[in-house]
Image (cartoon, rainbow, N blue to C red; front, side, top):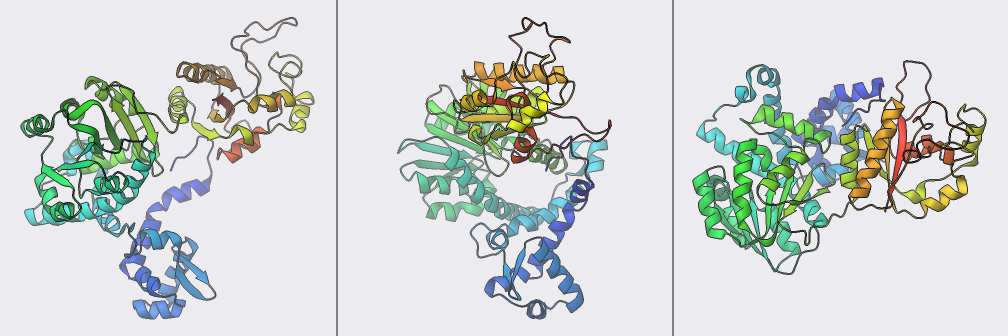
Amino acid sequence: MRILPSDSSYATFCSLLSGYRYLTVTMQAVQAGLVEIVARKPLTTEALLDEAGLLRDEGRRLLELLTAIGIFELYDGLLYLSGFSRTYLFSGSPLNQLDALKFERLLMEKWGGLDAVLRQGQSATVGENHPGEYQSRLELFQRAMHGAAVVRSDELWKALPDLPECGRIIDIGAGDGSYLREFLRRHPGWQTLACDLHDVLELNRCAMDEDGIAHQACNIADRHERDAFVAQHAGSCNLLLMSNLIHCYSLPENQAIIRSLAGLLTADGVLVIHDFFRDGNSFGALYDIHMLVNTYNGRTYRFDETALLLQQAGLSHCDIIELPSCSHAMLASRQSSGVVSRDPLFLLRHEAMTLGFFEAVPVDPAAITSEPWVRAKCAYGCPSHGRKWSCPPHSMDSTAFTDLLRSYSKALLVAGQPPLKEFQSRLLELEKSAFLNGHTKALVFSGGPCCWCDECPDDRCLFPEKRRPSLESCGCDVFALAETAGIRVVPLRSSDDFVQFIGLLLVE
C-alpha cells in the first residue's frame, strides 16, 4: 500500500485504519472451520452456521462480510469458496498460507512493542525463548516460510535468465529446500546443496533426502564455520542463492558474509540475492520495520547499499529483477555473461523515484493516443499558445506525435510536484540516465509549458538543448493516460489542491 501525494481521500484513511480488521475476520473464517466446511461442499448460510456451531444472527453478519470482501462467493443461495480462498486459505491447496496466518498472530504481539523499540533500541522486545517454545516457534516458522517459498520460488526461477543444462546451485539459508526443489523441477540436470543451521536442517533432512537435495549444516554468521564451508566448496558453484537472508544481518555482518561466500562461485558464477528492499516498494519499507521489532539487528537494505556490498566482494556486475509479489532479485557476477534483465524499465523506474518523482509506471506507447480536442484546448484557453517554442504551433502536431510513438516499444509515465522548472529538470536527468544506460533513443515529453525562460524570443529558442514538448501540446489526453496507468489526476478546484505534473519517457 502506498498513499500518493495527490490522495487526500477519507476512503484511503478508512482502508488504512481498518486493514487489521480484514486480517482478523479472515483468520476467524479459518479458525472457525468455515473455509474447510465450504470447501467440502457449497452450503446455505443457515446450514453453514449450524455445521460450524455459530449463533444465527452474529454468524450471519460475519458471513455477509466474508462474502462482501471475497472470501466466499454466493451463487443461487449457496456459499462457495472464492478462487482466492481456495488458493490460499484451503488446507488442500498446495499454495495454502494457513501456517503463515498462525505465525502472524505471534508477530502481531511483537508489533505491539514498536514504541519500546523506538525509544529503547532495536533489541528491546527481543528475548530468549524457552527451549521447548523455541522449537515449536521454529517449526511453525518453517511451515509458514514454506508457504511463501512455494509461491516466490516459482516467481524467481521463472524470471531468471536461461541457464545451461547442468551446473551446481548452492542455497544459503535454504530452509526446507523449497527453492531448490522448484529449481530441480525446472533444471533436473543440476547438482544441489542446501545450507542452513543445524536445527533447521534436522527438521527437513528426511524430505530433502527423498528429493535428492544434498545438505550441509553451517552457521554462516560464525566466521570459522563459514570459512570452513567456503574452503570445502570453493569455486564449485555456478549459481549461489541467498533468499530472504541478508535482512537477518547487520551491514558489517553482511559485508563479511558476502565477501566470504563469493569464494564459492566459479569464474562465471552468478550470485542471486532475493529479498525485500527498502526502496523497492512500500512493502520493503514495511518489512524493514518488521525486522526492527522482531530481530536484534536485522533490516532491509536499499539497492545501492546491496550493490556496494556486492562490489566489495568483487562482484561488480549487477542487475535487478522485480518479481510479482513485492520482492526483488539482485544478480551479480564477476563478468556480465548470462545476467540479462527481462525488465529493462525497472532500473529506469527506480532512477525516476530516486530523482524525486512520486510515481513511475510503464505504459505501452501503442496505447497512447492524440486527440484533436486537446490541441484545440491549447489554442483556445492556454496563454502560452504561440508564445512558447515548446507549444503549438511550434510543437509537433498529432500526426507527427503518432508517427513518433510507432518508433518505440516502451515508455515510462512519471508524476511529480512543483516547481515546474525542477520537474522539467528531473525529466532531462531521467532522459540522460536512460541514454547513458543504453537507451539511445530516449526522449522525454514534459507536463506544462517550457519554463526555461520567462519570454521566448520571436526568432529562436534560447535553450534548444533543454526544450521538450509537453504532452498536451502533442494532443495527448493526459488525464486519460494517467488514469490507465493508475495515477490519479483531478482538475484543480482551489488553491489548496495538490498540483502534480505528468511526464513521459520514451525508450527502446
